Length: 167
Image 1: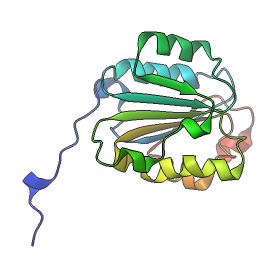
Image 2: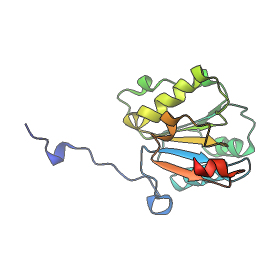
Image 3: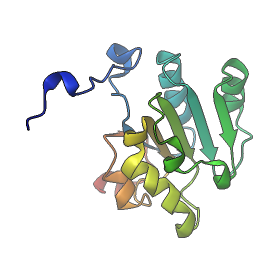
Image 4: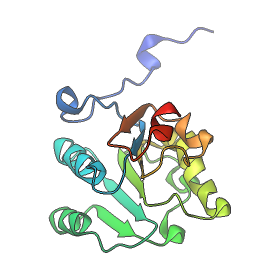
C-alpha cells in the first residue's frame, strides 16, 4: 500500500517565519558567553512567533531571577519559568497533544549527568511532541554531542576563546 500525499499532515510555518527562518518543531542550540545576546535572541523569537505556542516552559538551572524572563511572564500567561528540573514534564505526557509548544533550557551545562538525560530526551524526540526546543549555553564544547547533533540550528555568539569555534 502506498502513502498518499493527502494523508501526510503539512507543517504550518510559525508566525513570523519570514523574519526568523526557524522551522516549527526545531531544536536550537544557542551558545555564547554571558551577556552576548542569547536570551535577547530567544525573546525576539518568542515575540516574532507571538501566539504560535500554547505553552512556553523555561528552565533555568541556576535561578529564576532573570529580569527578561520576568517581563515575559508578565506579558504572556502561557509562560512558565522554573529552576526545578522536576517541573519539566516528561515528553510522554504530551502524547496526542498536537499543539505547538516551546521549551527552553538555560544555564543547564553544570547539571549532573543523570539530570542532563531529560534534556537529551527533548533533543532527541521533542519534535514528535510538537515542541520547538532551545538550548542556551555559555560553552559549546561542554554541550553533550547527543544534544548538539540533534539540533537543526546552531547559533554562535561572541566566544571567549578559539576552542569553542574549532569545535
